[in-house]
Length: 505
Image: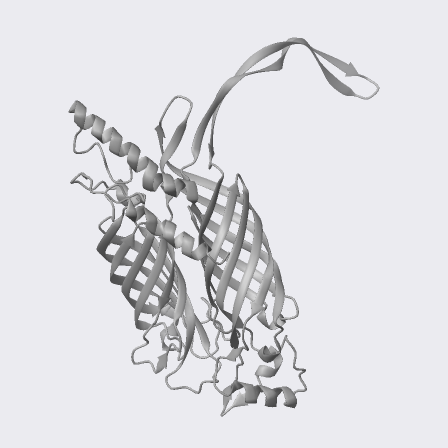
């Protein structure tokens, strides 16, 4: 599993080797915008200017774009400027959605083997924020919620299926319910201006790679039909009931059926995986990268993964003691992270498959959808082994000594469920998860439990991509060669026009 990441990145780059200069139409089709889609992970740093608060670490998030529409969801922590490092941090979240204005990275809009483009972009939309100070939980109804307008200039760099988006978000936030005068609440960090530099790494959804095969079925079937010849009525005086008696005969008839089925062909693929955990005050930071080998057959989905990086661990002190454990007048939190390696397997079932797009007939008995978008919802079971490669490191300096003091004070036993220093060398991990598949990209959420390492139990979010190997090779080499021979034949016949070949064909 270790070479999977390198091989998958090579597959992402290898189509560029096959790049050739081609003639493209001068006009930009509006359909190019509609067929573009990608899913990515965002790292940002909100700036709460003039509010006396800051973000002690990067905010994480998910960025989704389909056609002209985008939605971005980020979350992270806040604390007072120059606050004590053991302060219990506040948790915040921001959601923005709207329309992106940018020139398409390809004329056709589809992912192509040789795509390489650099474009400016400008987002405009609506933003929602729930960013309370300190430890108040973010919620729509308790005051910290704010609503406003979102503007975001930036640039897009695209290479084949990889996107890199750099943005400077500006959100002008007002109070969620102005008539209740909640704007004066002292714990609302969302109200006002928030400037957020951000970087997003995303992967093209590659709708064209997963264009489902279109199969048309029609034929005949037989069924019976009852034909009525006479209806009589009989009155029963003893029961005082009127009974209807129908007489007739049955005939055999022939019916016709005509329906379509859209089905994605089975494939084996590989791709990168990025796993992280939403930043919360009771967990250290998770950041793991790796690769996966996957198989999709009809509604069945199988994956094997290898990940390496930092795994976030829980606060070792039970919640009921956290209210009394304090340092210099501030609540104390004990979170940690550990360098870990994870090898696992997942088996799941797609419970929903949705197809959208236009049809294009290829022949009488074989057709495909062109420009098709595919969404799938999968539930799965995960089992694997996690190796802890080094001693855990606590998030805050001096936390170990304070942890020992608190555990002694409250008679808390030191174990792998309360103390990150008691982790075993390795542990089996298992749990349930769900994934939202958008083309070849998936957004996953897992709830995992570790054997003899309960301090690592929790939910994680991951972004993964699975490239159908045979389709990538065909797109990069075989199909391009066929198009080249076709264009050469047209040139020999004198029938080629400037619009016969578009990138993505």
